[in-house]
Length: 182
Image (cartoon, rainbow, N blue to C red; front, side, top):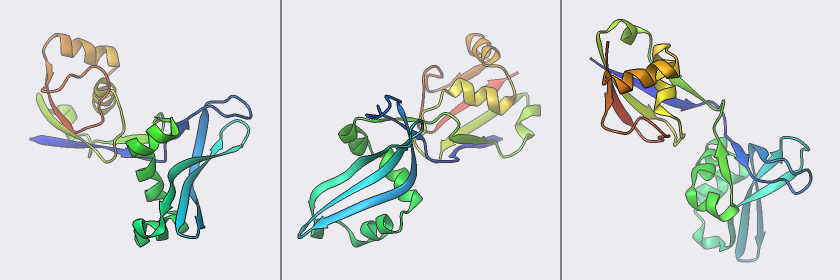
């Protein structure tokens, strides 16, 4: 039987960027946007606060963009400070590159295994789905899902008892499957 696990975000990730006021490198975003229109041009930023000094930084979503080229629903979501939109913006590679930021997903996600039925099976087939593009080490997910140490998971991979079509070392942020034979 195929078990499905889901990696679910629990909050917005920290933004990794150097603070100009205190030299800290972590910002927390609350999902608030600032929108400024000047005649036919519009700018929009996602606001983030330094975790150390509380200074605000603006992450550019778009700048000097013609108002007519921005979808009205997008503007409504920005004006409503939609946290879902904040998550989408933070995961947009164009926004991350433009603002020279990275994301820190530590303590911002959880693994939903759907119960403990898979723990008793001799052969467990598991499909892992990601609700958001969260980079996580598969070894960590497997260890957490089966209640094992990471060293035990590494040993199972070496012994050929844990197999997958994807490389289980490194980080993944896309769906994958694996089989564990006990």
